Image 1 (cartoon, one colour):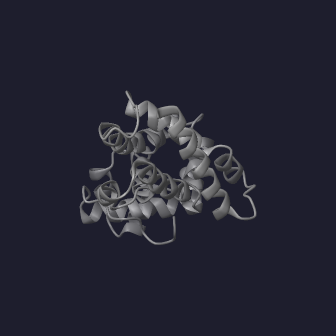
Image 2 (cartoon, rainbow, N blue to C red):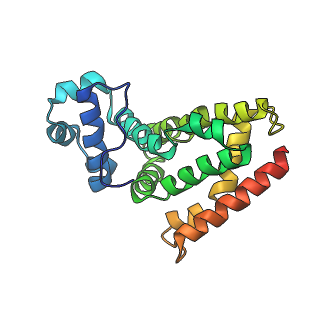
Image 3 (cartoon, rainbow, N blue to C red):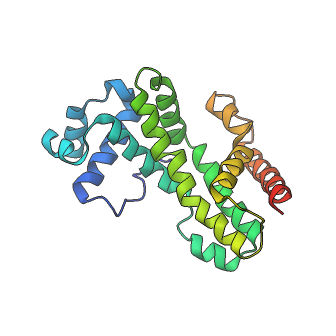
Length: 206
């Protein structure tokens, strides 16, 4: 994501949103271990007690930061896209924004932090899964279910289909970028990856 704050979460009050934004900045600049709740409270302009009143642990706060980042991976006008585009183009639009989003420096950095810390701090890995991939599946599977109800795809398990679409979308491009070996023209590579994924997805669920 960019340096700007992510889209505000309407489920968070103003102080909680400030805490999440501050935590995100601290995690990205200092890593998980070095980011203290004291620093997060200071950056957010609240007391440490206020932080703990809203988030029980640093792992929970990391999860909230992941969710805030994931909100930028989905188009804000999904209902309009569904209403005005053919099914394949709906999948392509959502898939393109998702893939562009996970390739952004902030999203990559948070993934690296979670992967690095997960063995030593399993709760952090679980927080990443719960607020990242699992959250995305929960948000996106209803889109596929609605497209299937329109007769566009033969999908019996929308969550399973979303996991498969995610695998088709990300590899091998995502691993290359995550490991610091992006192609020279990343934008063209993203478009090509999405085209292949949508083609394969349609073949599987036609």
